[in-house]
Image (cartoon, rainbow, N blue to C red; front, side):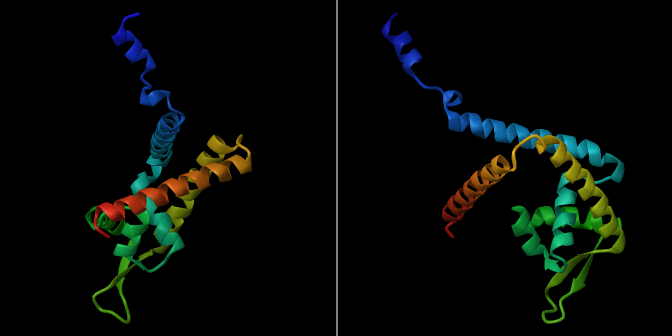
Length: 163
């Protein structure tokens, strides 16, 4: 074996590292979950980004567009594109804030609430079918690990943005 071959064999490629493997597995699982959820929601004419908005408005009625964008980790421009689509369908409404006329609050309409409940049933069934065989303790460990990674990335992003 020559020197160059020895260097190549001793070099550790990123895909050989357990953290890289974990990252790839999480990314692929997320992508497959999004694709599957998209297919299962087709008959409702709801895509995962819409569902994210609807579920958050279901949970946090009356939040602002800025608060919603922060929860979903997207820019306000993304919200500006998605919200009118949901508004035109009669699923959400914007109302002025009683204390601050510059602020608009977002809420589900009754049709939006009904559609969200139906979509959440589909999402919950998908989660149960894909995670049902996993022990709850393992699910908690994965969630805690992902939450730590999210916190680290958000902190790094704030530092990079000068915040």
